[in-house]
Amino acid sequence: MTSTATRPRGARARAAIAAKTLRTDRWWFAPLITVIGLSAWVAYATVRVFMHKWYWVEQYHYLTPFYSPCVTDRCVEGASHFGQFLPGWWIIPDAALTLPFLLLFRLTCYYYRKAYYRSFWLSPPACAVPDKHDSYSGETRFPLLGQNLHRYFFYAAAIISLINTWDAVLAFHSPEGFGFGLGNIVLLVNVVMLWAYTISCHSCRHIIGGRLKHFSKHPVRYKAWTGVSWLNVRHMQLAWITLGTLALTDFYVMAVAAGWFNDLRFIN
Ligand code: FES
Picture 1 (cartoon, rainbow, N blue to C red):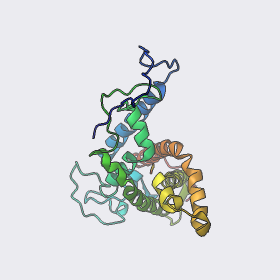
Picture 2 (cartoon, helix red, strand yellow):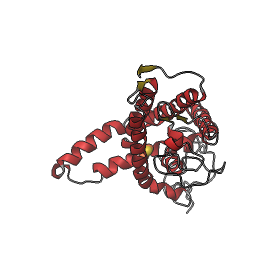
Picture 3 (cartoon, protein in one colour):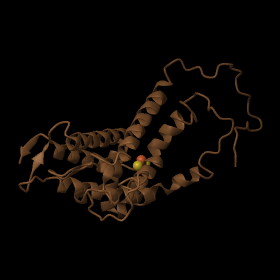
Picture 4 (tube, rainbow, N blue to C red):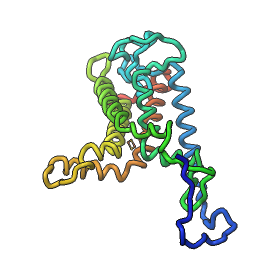
């Protein structure tokens, strides 16, 4: 159902103001930065995902999150912790098992929805700046109705964070056995931030305790909900920080794998 603004009977008419908005600040700045930031990240990720190389450092077992887990028969064996069951066609990402879920997790995220509805769809571009569309149906129709599936992508993302954690643990490796280098710090920081972003999810907050009526009857869930709420306040920042740590981690692994620079080693 398309809804348009209608004036309730008896209400006064709106003031006749010709200007589209009376805002004089740079209200367009935030949407512009969002378009530039998200477009740049998507361009980088797309190039990397379809590059099909420089994702694994054999010597130290560094694996970029963009290729985790590597499940096509083109993958380097050490990078495939869960087998190789897909054909290595160019169009199939090597991490085809996880990337679609991560994409849907971020696409249906409450924060990103706000970001792209405003900056790409201009609905509205900013507070007190008119919508660029004649009609508005919100999220009442397909495909936007699908945004309600976010909690299922949250479950998938939590499992994928476990896989990323396992990758970070396996990366404490060197030809001598145990190893510790700058790459380990990069991978670890990324995993910690990914967990922080995942746990700060609005669906997580709801599942953990947000839907309860009597906190006094659920002290443990209340405590957990308090912690998640603290993180949830920072969800926007975590959404951007994790885009940064993901790209940085991928770039570091690519650079070491390609031999552009050596990993800084602390032990072995
Ligand atoms: S609301 Fe952003 S990840 Fe769930």
